[in-house]
Image (tube, rainbow, N blue to C red; front, side):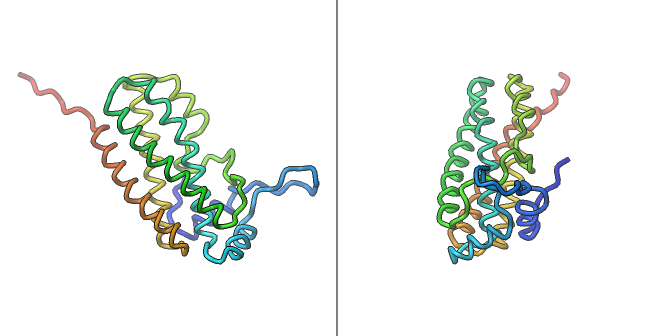
Length: 205
């Protein structure tokens, strides 16, 4: 099971240091730029003057998690005819798309590199390629079960790291976005719980 990130310190360490940033390549002017480390992220935010390393780390993770989720939500219209699941997926997609746009805007404002430091990483709350393939091959009730599990994992982790950003971030716009993610994430989890509730047992006549 993938470990959960729950505190601001762990958020930064897990995203920027503990195996999440790619190892720097050998010096080569023709090679792609290496993934930013905690030090370079801190320097970028210091230059911007308003963002902390925690702010940047959370924005980068939020963008990466959302990019992984959107293809899952895009499967719903063609994999289930259930209007309730379609409605839930559409609501979550609208909110997550807005979060992705906002996180990219804030990252640009922070001066952080535009590259995604989580490319190819399977963090908590991120759908893996194998999981996405399994969803693509499922329909009906099996699809609902897989979808519910992945949505719950994503939403739960989103709320956890957004709460960490609220507690440890310093940029007002970023912490305000984190507060909104917590509110909408909890509301979406409540909707998911109602929809994914197992049917009541049938009583004998």
